[in-house]
Length: 84
Image (cartoon, rainbow, N blue to C red; front, side):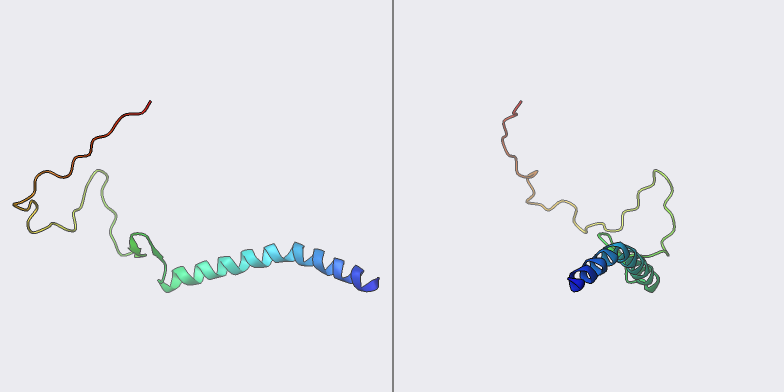
């Protein structure tokens, strides 16, 4: 009986302390990852060297050599039926 009481107390202490420990560990991991520069997102590696872009300006980084091939017929057209 004494064993189950101690086990129950330990279980509740674990449930009270564990969220705080996990929050601290996750915060430390995120800070370490960002400071090392190994953070990546969908756009690529996280870089702070990129200058801010003015509002309304568009920068094109890739321009194809031949924008319209000679055999291009305007794309593929698909019939559809509007559903209301």
